[in-house]
Length: 235
Image (cartoon, rainbow, N blue to C red; front, side, top):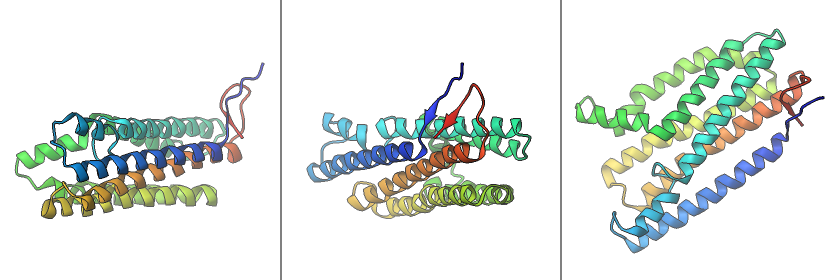
């Protein structure tokens, strides 16, 4: 008996985009209400706002992003397994990519980089809010690019372009808008609509990037991997 797990990449992508749009809308409404009514920070109303606001942790957007990172990690390891079975190269690259997304999923839930930020600020190493991504993010991106650009060139052109696009969008949000937003927060504070828009845009770009990545991996499995008798199949 043949077991099939049937997944449509474009349908998954559309569902993810709808979910992102709903989260962004809910966050915008919640933030607008907070800025308009100026509720006290510890009020019940603000607790509801934080449940939907993209710029806070341990809420619905955080859960959604963590699940997207986890899905990306699982798909990467599936691709690695198929790649090994097909006798192709780059198994290690796919496995390491899976590890990266697993870390991002844990970080999103456990606030690892926020904790490092707070520790560095307390130790007076740097004002991490302003410079932390410059210290860790940009060198990390450069190292990743050096290692993975040759890998992307070995992939089918469509797949390589889509992974590169998703990476560029993710970096634009997680590094670019993060720096802009934190710089604005230092000079103008976080209790204003402009900072809220910057923070929300950052999170939306990250989620859109991961949605593109998930679609890309499903599409790659569909078009370039041999289907097993029992296993994972996409349409």
